[in-house]
Image (tube, rainbow, N blue to C red):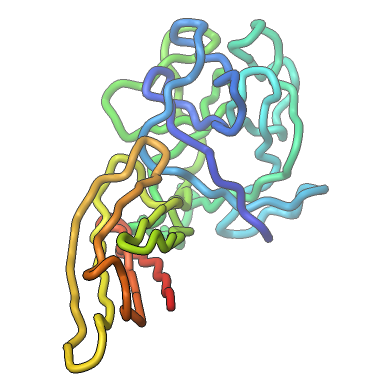
Length: 247
């Protein structure tokens, strides 16, 4: 199955919501757009149909085209509550399969550097929310979310990538798919020419709130005679790395 990026945690209502539209959805906390923060989640999906549940996955998770949260479409419409208009969530788009640990069985899906646990189904509004804080966010039915059922472990930030741009005297590095608001260790090296050893340098920078960054390093003599330019960028949270090469 494929996976879809841009699912984010909302700092106000604690829901999992899709961040790839300009509107920002609708948050039940204040009726405004959701506020994205934290990991960039990448749940797996089937484009056309709900696959059967397995011991470690649950199906029927969908995108609500009104408030933009992820909710369980296996519920009845009258059990759902959308912050956009107070009516039921309306399903649209892909059919998601989410990793799950059943409360009645062993924890078969571990939390890792690229998968976060403590995501739960809200028994009041049927949306997915993060249950890892003492506070429980905001539910569109009023009050806070109420955790019900099993515990989900959602994959995140598994696709770091970099693009190198040769500007002659400088090499620009554009990164995407890293953990937002976190560190990236950059190691670059190049061969400056005959009778000179390989030059290596390091730098550590932070990504923006979408997991992107831009960085540059300079080449000697405006890059003349420089060959074998290599860059590796390592996410300091997940330890996943992306590399690139020029010349």
